[in-house]
Image 1 (tube, rainbow, N blue to C red):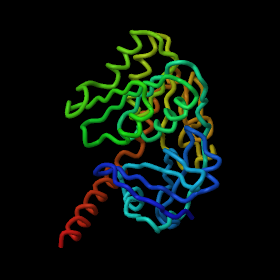
Image 2: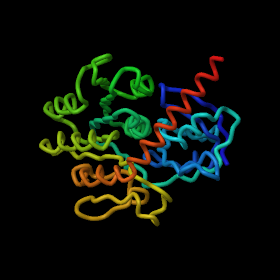
Image 3: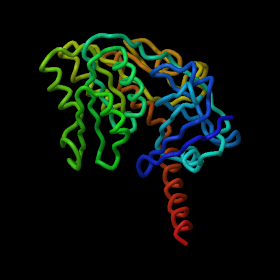
Image 4: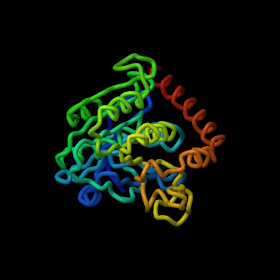
Length: 284
């Protein structure tokens, strides 16, 4: 069990929890994740990247979006409550070294797992350029934290409500055209990561993507998280979550992500109804 130390709502559907987990905080490395269960009865096992950690306090920070019943249960927890199961750190850590200039591209909730990687790349002595994207200004998260890391910071929104009205691939291409980029890291929706990889490919810029696939046990046994990388089958939970983006079969990955789409839509609909009921009760 892990006690909730702090809870913060970052946007309408995105929440941040700081959890008491001293052993995980001590062992975790940038790029690794945990699997949470809000309770031991009916909650799904939810893989979430460790967005930050404090070894002194013995805490880890996770950020998630409410998309169904299990994430709604997590969002309803408050300081002092307990998360029943927390397993980690899992996955292979990001390889961090001084390479020169690193471009970190985060889309939507993908900014959360990007944060510790950008932080570690900066600490290693790299020049870090950060590009953040979201559909609208209200959906941006961790802006202040990412600005504090970046040597150059760019924000894009689909609707132009903040920063540039562009897809993140537009400034990414501009930066690549100038030259001098040694590494790119892209984390966000699969379609975004795919086109980031296609943007950097012509320039020969080594690019990594952190994948978020269907996952059950997180130890390589179920095979639910399998992806094709360089023509070979890999498991995101033990071989990843980070892979060479130029070798990932994103089309196959996106097809597999739709395996439970009807169930996800039903869960999301019920979640929205529950949220509406809760809001009505709060105003009574």
